[in-house]
Amino acid sequence: MSLTEATNPFHAGEREAQARAGVGDVASWAAGFVRDHLPEQHRAFHTALPFLVLAGADEHGRVWTTLIEGADGFVRSPDPRRIALHATLQAADPLAAACAAGAEVGALGIDLATRRRNRFSGYLRPAGAGYLIDVRQTFGNCPQYIVERAWTRHAAGTPPPARLTDALSDRQRALVGAADTLFIGSGHLRPGGGAANGFDASHRGGAPGFVRVIDGTHLQIPDYPGNNYFNTIGNLVADPRVGLLFVDFETGGLLHVAGRATIDWQPRDGYDRQARRTINVTIDAVLDRPGAMALRWFRPAASARPLRLVRRQVESAAITSFHFAPADGRALARFEAGQHLPVELRIPGQASAVARTYSLSGPPAEGGAYRLSVKREPLGLASRYLHDTLREGDLIEARAPAGDFVMPRDAAPLVLVSAGVGLTPMVSMLHAASAQGRSVWFVHGARNGREHALRAEVERLVAQGRGALRRRYFYSQPDSQEQAGRDFDRAGRITAADLLDLDAGDDAHYLLCGPSRFVADIRNGLDAAGVAAARIHVETFGPGG
Image (cartoon, rainbow, N blue to C red):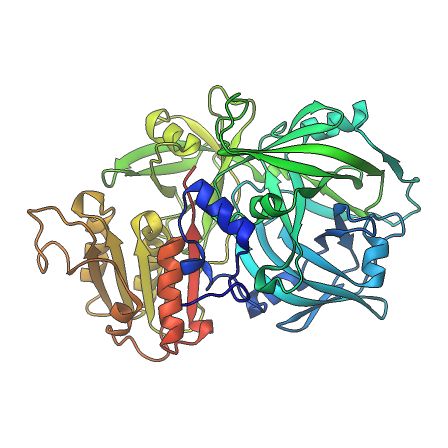
């Protein structure tokens, strides 16, 4: 696909950041994930939310990030290219005047309870008793680093007066220093800037204290591994203006920070060893709005429960399965094939629990244990702890299974496609499909047999399926003793053409899981071949943790 400056989903600053990070030409594969409209699933997601995050610039050019809330159903989507908000920003909001006049905005829809999020940008204008946003660009995000919270709604009252200062007070420094969540706004506005023009609202999360308070006018924000788009950092490379929002979840207070940012590409002080880069923020203005929101959030502590590791099983050179049983005697919550398990790990040397999500790889009907099949990443704090330290009998904490990457409800054939550790939700789906008697192609790509996990289990399920379940293996770098037709089916990587050659049927659903580039290449190929978007379902993962 040939991309021009007008059609490239990434502007020059984002491309520079991608190059500095060494992730290659992201636009060559990610364009299929960045759309100019909201898919039906994203429309349904946004319209069910009690608030949205907005980022933009005020009349003085300062960038701010804020929340807009409303009654149930206040977000609507008249069509895939528009979002309507039946609410307006309070007069004290730093973006109120700009939005009343019409403005470019970035928006983030995030459900802290289910840890889902989607981003979009566009032009906001007043419309009736609210706003209408013409969507320009939209894409999804993984749930990594989102701290789970549930919400309640309090009776709206008159909030205390807002206070504008040019530095953080001691109380505000304490709030920032204890935060595990912040929202960050940035922008790239250039006449004729094309598809990538506009603002971006994003989320950052980590252990309490992950934002480092240097003094009243300087902060440091770690940049953890992500989807390699570098939207925020790319914007800051092009335009250093930044807006931060810290939420007092217990009181509904909003602390807005406007400033300028620089990027430290090789942080050396070691205050956060998980960080690949650091965003250094110099504060220009602070707007404190106590009690600004009617919403309140809380950590559902009762939903976290202890699980005991009862078995470890090596599945390949890099992947090990961990079987967890309840340590409190209560039955485990059921899950749907394809869902993930949010876990919290108490890792020595870390000040607080490290949160991660891993796909459940076992049969959904197996209620006695959860199985997580995890790849050991050389730089992954959590995966190294699981592989190198956690032993049978040790405890972790987990929350209820979640995620909407699940098998479609109809009875149409399935084509389950994975690469590397992306096979974990697919194996769970294969178990479920086998129990339902569905027609399935299981297609998996690995480097070679040593790195091919859970093969014996898949072979057993396929044999039991009596023709309804079929499999195909692709090895990209087979060992010299491995032979095509005996140890694997084809050399090379899986392509969309390979999947179409299976002749699974016009009504087949294609479920794809693996590295972002792998998923994007196949998705783009299926789309180009005329496979309906509603029949392509994807789950991606970035650098492991």
